[in-house]
Length: 206
Image (tube, rainbow, N blue to C red):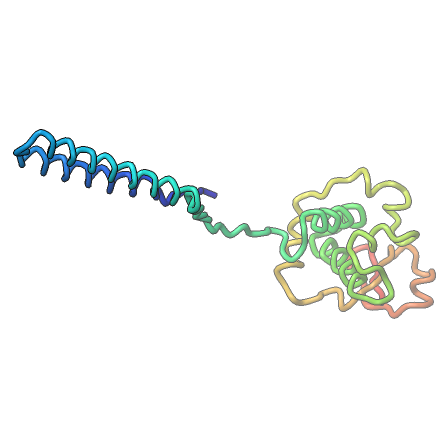
């Protein structure tokens, strides 16, 4: 942001006018030679008195009308784009991190499904309404319980999965709210939830 200061220099303008007046009067007096010495001194005295009055008026004017400073701000409008729109960086990082923790061995679609399941929970009244609270909700995600979530960092596939989710309005998870390893075929999920589909090594439910 750049700032330019414009000052209304009332003093400079007034002083300039006075100097111009003095110069004109002085030239006039120089060109017209006085006929009498006494008359010359009278004119000089009147001239000095006029200048004094003008300066006095100027000082009074300045006292009651201080210099006004106008600050004009030039803002360079720069559009700052958020590459994680409509999420913040923290939210994007949490989504890619849970995808890595839950589906590191899965393909990109498997990671997309994990991210969409978390977002479906955020939109559901049955779960907390923020990404962070959904991921850290007690007894919900195994990587949170065993500490794996804290140890992993999202790889390129996780970030690609994130951008696939943000770049599409389609929910390929079909509204999934849960997923579970196929190895646990007889568990709470299978007995209490609606089975949707299997992808890779995981079953998805709602």
